[in-house]
Image (cartoon, rainbow, N blue to C red; front, side, top):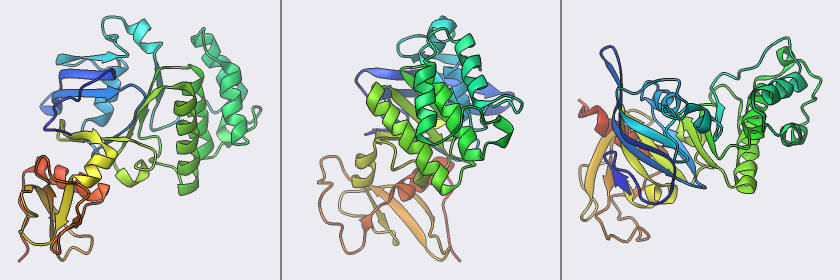
Length: 301
């Protein structure tokens, strides 16, 4: 588990080194170090304004960092933009569809822009969901438009998929279908996905890694299961044995203050929680680290 923005080890599909970005007086990213392992599906979680979109846009060479560097499949997108973009499939939060064009027109346009675009592969993905190729984009539902965007990204056969909050405007069924198509593609193609969201429950079933971004800094970077097992939650200011406080936040009812604790290195994560603590959910883990990054203590009168 990597805390405070340090990077993991191993082969990286996407890497950031000392990455910083400012917009006038606002710090979007602050010396971010990050490595996304090849073959992983990583949840990039944080509140709106945390820097998630900025990080993805820098990886796409849409934004230039003030300092630091990124690599996509080992290629710097600012030094070798065309080469890097050939390795990336991108899905924005708002589907990039053209109202007057049919679904098939979108695939043809993608083929004209990417010489290696696999039209048949994209068609098969859409066929799985019963989306007609002759349907006009302005008649697609939100979920269908998102699936069209995903099919175009998958049709590039890119090694790295960057998805910027694609689930934000989808209903529960459309979310599930989107995630299933994504997971099927990652499994069959051996690609790597970075799935951004401000709600961890939207993406936890799809991902095997968790990166929490808050205030432009990486607050936590570790495998998903490790995030669950290495933390405990209490209502009182009484830590589990050897644990370190991460952050405190209000309970759902707003009546109690909950504290997230990180177990000491070497502690047995499979041990039963004590009477005064319980295993933290991923949502609890995210809230604890974001509260720590905010640096504001909570008190109830």
